[in-house]
Length: 299
Image 1: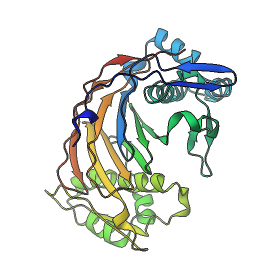
Image 2: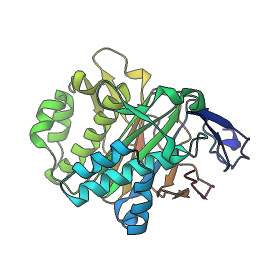
Image 3: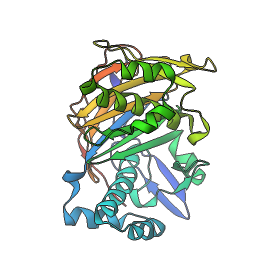
Image 4: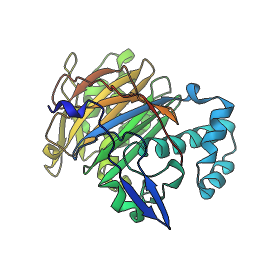
């Protein structure tokens, strides 16, 4: 692996112009080669400071401010604010666009993507977001299809949903486990399936029982099959981000990617996130160290 993937790089004087403004990359950009993915993770409780929330609100677009106000509960308002600010500030590490100047458009199935008017500045940059109780996970990739899903292990598993969404093989394997282990296995399978659906960008048009995962006890390998025989196009990783959170990543690649995991906070990001990688399509996983620590300019 190229060691440059892990080391800081000096920023070129990259410029980009839109709506008459000229932007210059004033800080060191993160190096993300085509076909690679970085993961950013943020705990809700670490972003509860009122001053930080006010700063996050200052970089949101007017329509985002209105959407936030429509949430009834303060908890949901906070989660929306945090996720939107996190996307904007993290993306500004990879492209010469200030956090408040990012523009997004909804995809055909609701997944937001970077607006096409910014295409000349982002060089194939894309993102996918997942949030659950207590945690936000943001995956950033370049010229690659991918999806990420996170779940809180303390919530009750949707047993009835499993009967509708899991294949016969998955249900049989799930029910064969001792009852105390079934809840965790449910979330292990569920996050993998969700990450695949999100990577395919097909919403619920994919029958959830048309593909299946096999997870054997004491085995760090993820088995995957599809009814259309395209399973070999996809690879998966799964980690215990915290003792209470499970995260799964899907990507259209045949390679064991050198994943970098960072602890994220709007405007102050870059520390390495210590996670427990459980399994992948390639067996054991090594999460590469994030050397950078930096702050995010908003203008």
